[in-house]
Image 1 (tube, rainbow, N blue to C red):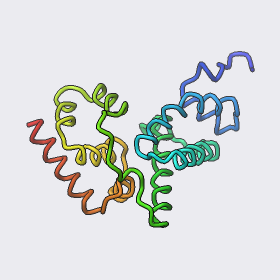
Image 2 (tube, rainbow, N blue to C red):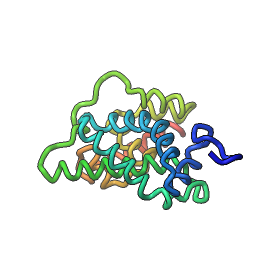
Image 3 (cartoon, rainbow, N blue to C red):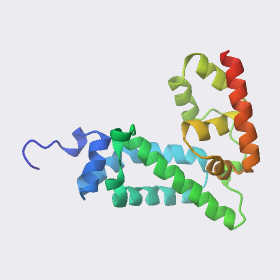
Image 4 (spheres, rainbow, N blue to C red):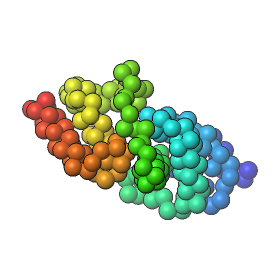
Length: 186
């Protein structure tokens, strides 16, 4: 290690991505160590099929290795973790499309477990106050659409594929969710 250069463990994720763009394997390994557990949990929340989750994880980090130089970062108001999640969520949608092409419904269309997921609890802790209360009062099917479109930044089409719903249903639920949120916050 050169004098004056921080160890990968002392750098933030954005700096790690910039080093990965230069081919720094140690920075890539550190980025993976930090983000893979979190990313796997988020993907499992949306897909119960471990094989698909493993494929998406592999495709995501391969894309990060190949395209780290394309990361714009804070210059456009982004974060490395947000960029990573965008890649992963798009790879997951692609996996669902491949699966739909083979006429199998995605596991995300299955009935959701009754116990609150860790992500929902984290969301509740993050989105507090009146907005958090209004979000928690939404029907689960409306909250899912709102979460996919607003919090995860997916398009109507991507949300439809992710949740195994027709695009029209996604649009209707998104509208109903927005109306319910406005009423609750008025």
